[in-house]
Length: 292
Figure 1 (spheres, one colour):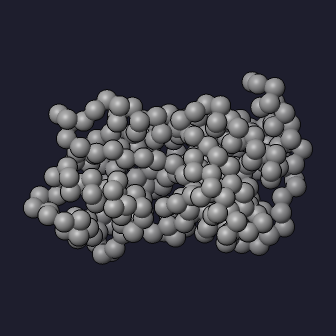
Figure 2 (figure 1 turned 90 degrees about the horizontal axis):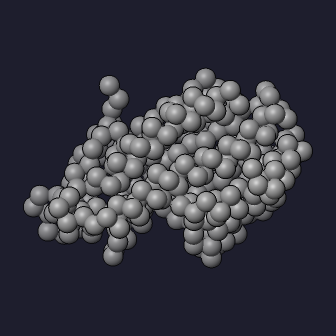
């Protein structure tokens, strides 16, 4: 362990009983949300903040993260991170401890998508998706858990949480979207394995598997959004416009709408509040994907 990590662990241990006296379902909790400058991450961070958490808006886009943190208030801070980079993730964790005194919950939300037919899909795109969605999850869990284990040593009765935002594509395959689905399936394997290893340290590890956030930038961006990607990839038979693609995906959901950040945030809070659950992959799909 590096000298810096040892220093951050000691600081977290010293501050384990020094949490803000704030009401709410997550009152006083110190939370990191990766990929929180926009999309699901931003919405999740906003909801957790409303419930009393001190929130780190962690994102590659630092100016946008700073804007989100400023709009939230004094219990929010922005930290730049590239989740695929070992040193960057360690720095994110260290700065969180220096800013707020510890880490009670990591929401590993950062993720990317590249889709297309197998025969024409390029290795560089496969590597990009894997580096963020799979290796990035490993790095975030590694460094956050080091701090959490130190806190457990100082306060053995406390529980801490790692929640990864997976996808319904981590529960079933996705046509012409194999890089993303494979990374999410792999992420659930990490979640189950980490849950077994970290349970003795009071660290619960779970995954949330949302349905499609059709109103978010991941889907709606006019240049790189999934509506455009899927239209160009021919993933939706007969679709001629992005509206055709949207209607196709809305029709798949029994609840007749896309997933929203509030839906996911409620599932995250359930994971934190539930003291007898770890290693789970929880669908939040409006009934589109149901567990057997």
